[in-house]
Image (cartoon, rainbow, N blue to C red; front, side, top):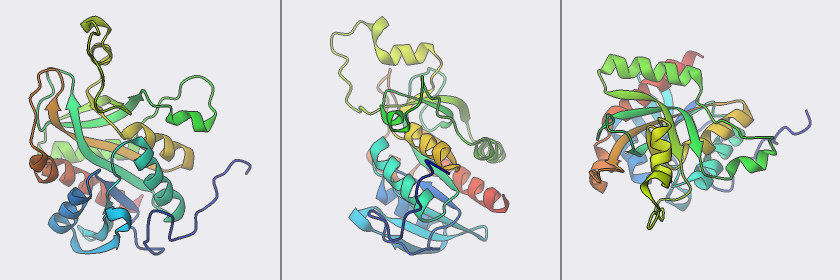
Length: 254
């Protein structure tokens, strides 16, 4: 069919793994050290399958199911590259981003989980697809529904809704009246939290007929300034990791 993306040969430019090294589902934290932590803490017999540019990828088993975890780096260009290569080079069907996000709602607190049903963005990532109007990046319903089941079963505090994927970490808000500031605009539209990857991941999944989901732990509250430490972000967000792994196990038969 005209316009179908070519399958990539392996190894790809950014992943040195061999065909078959990845499971059907890959968890993608941004931080390579978080990838290592998840593999060593939760997977049985984890094997390092990628370490190009220090982007560590592991495959092991969880509840008897082959599952992989690999870092994505920070931002939409980075997760766009890695998800493209996993989807089109290694036959991965499901990617679950597990990361941190900043809450912009008073009722969403540190360590709460946010499950991104949709991802608004200020990025121009969608321009490459030559679409009319505005594209709405959304999660896979199958992954989303399994994540809600897993969060409920674990008694986790979670919220489902929109996040905002931004290209900017250090936004310049100096001199902008509160009512015109973009964060307050997103807040009044019910957006739960700010992060930097989900929209690109969801767009790639839509383009290539795959499934994607973003589950984040709240690491800071943007409006109040309350935040966790970098060490806590690396190792303390275990509830999110367990929920994502439960989803991976549940999806094996689909």
